[in-house]
Image 1 (cartoon, one colour):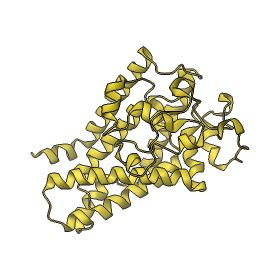
Image 2 (cartoon, helix red, strand yellow; image 1 turned 90 degrees about the vertical axis):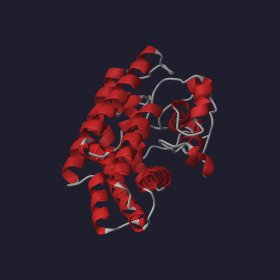
Image 3 (cartoon, helix red, strand yellow; image 1 turned 180 degrees about the vertical axis):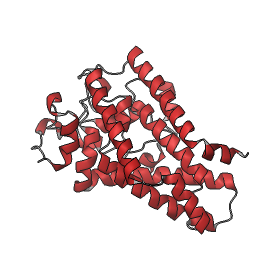
Image 4 (cartoon, helix red, strand yellow; image 1 turned 60 degrees about the horizontal axis):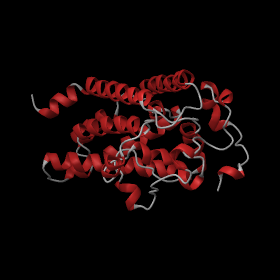
Length: 278
């Protein structure tokens, strides 16, 4: 059995194992050495965010008969996509596909910030009053569905190998939990890692209430795209301990329960807060 066959046959086990391992490690580090004090109790936020994860899992299962790897296998069988038309070494195709898919997710993230109707759904991710490992999977179910459709289209257009899709999915999920972590890496390590991947301090800027800060650092896994497209911001103006996490107008934890945040895209938007729009 080849390496590719092992990955494809054990995709579910690999994805679940990596998810649980990264979640457990990041959560443990957050408890032992938190970067910022929490403004809402961990129990309340985790109940809400983990409930969102469960809702999204159910929605994906009910909505899509196949996942991205199945779409990749179909594209390969029918010869669809750039890589299925090219004659490149398999490892080159895998690496190029993973990088290209990460660029697609970066571009999707930017679009969800700047297209008002899409921002309404993505905003659920940003109204979390703290940022930790669970925030990395806190997305509105409709955003998840749209993201899946975008991913399917990208896989078909690229002709991404199914193995590359599995690697990308594992990388995306793991890095989302890692870079939302409420912990701090040593400055030297953080600086070195930022040259390649998104670190917690880099991504935390993206969860600021200040527009010029939350409209920056859109990358999830690779940090290259923010530098290349001039959306990179090194640090928050108020510092990581002084910055405010969340969104203006959504500061009351009592109004950010599970039902409330699921209904958020359909509610009237609050008036801008001048203190958080500078």
